[in-house]
Image: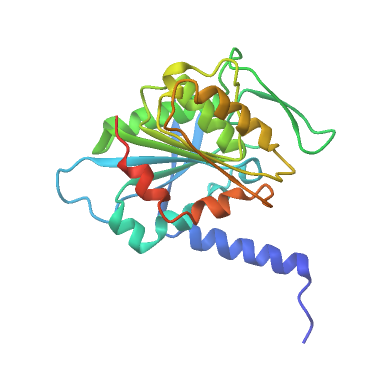
Length: 260
C-alpha cells in the first residue's frame, strides 16, 4: 500500500475538520443596502422553545481562514461551541462570519518583510467593508432573533483579535464582553468607553507572527480605565495561543456571566 504524502494527509485532515465543524452551523449570506455580501455560519441554541432572551456570540476568525467557501472560518473555535455540554450550559446563537481574502477585519497596515509582522493600527481610517458588514449583521440579528441585547459577546483570534478590539472601539454600546486573542489595536485611540467593557485578553509570549507587545500595549491602555481587565500571557507559546485559551476551564463561564 502506498503511503499518503504528508501534505495530502494534512489537507485531508483539514477537510475532515471543516466538515465536522460545519455540523450544526447553518450557512447564510447577509446582503446590505449597497448589495455588499457577507457570508456567515450560525449555530442556533439547542432549545429555543421558551420566550427567554438568548445571548449572541460573534466569532471573528484569523487571516488564514479568509475566503468565500463559507466553511473555512470554522477551523478554530467552532468545536468549543458545538460541545454538547457547552451547548446545554451556555445556550446562545453563535455567528462565524467569513472575511474575503482581499479584505481584513481591522484598520491596519501590515509590513510582511519580517516576522513578527510590523503592524500599524489607525482607527482614524475608515472602517473596513467586512467589519462594517459584521456590525450591520449583528444589529439585524438582534432585531430578527430572540437575542438578549445585554448579552452580545465578541471573540476573535489573530486578525480576528484585531477586529475584536476595533469592533468594540467602534460600537462600545453593542457588546457586553470581549475575548481578543493574539491580536492588537490602536492603543493611542482606543476609546475609554470600549476600555470599560469586560475583557479577557490572551497572547503567547513567543508569538512569531503577531508580537506579544501589541497586546501588552492594549493592556496598558485599557488598564487606565478598567482595573478588572484580565490578561493571560502564555509562556513558551507561539501564535496559536487560542488553543490554550479555548482550554481555559472558566472561559465560557466568565464570558456568559457578563451583561450590560
